[in-house]
Amino acid sequence: MSMDPARRLAEELARRGLATPARLLADAHRPMAPLLSDLGAALTPLLNATGMRRADELASLLQEPDALDRLVAELDAAGGRHGESR
Image: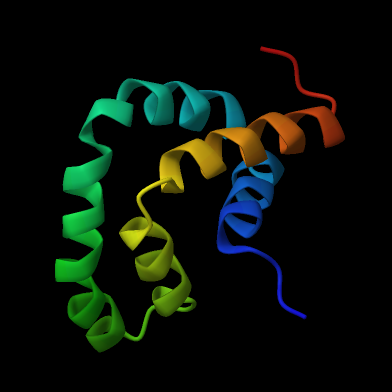
């Protein structure tokens, strides 16, 4: 079974020490979630054309209406797992 894209992204951000800035940006962009969803649908072909690893997962995460909420929850959980404090 594969890991949830939101969890995978949160783990990667936490591993790189970027969980806190990512959490702040995600909170700041919550009102734009519907636009980000549309952006995900538009960027999918471009991401696939670049050969970017896991482009499909990222694009599918962007297309979900609750993607930012899930990412924030995963960032909170990842911060706790990695001992980060906000």
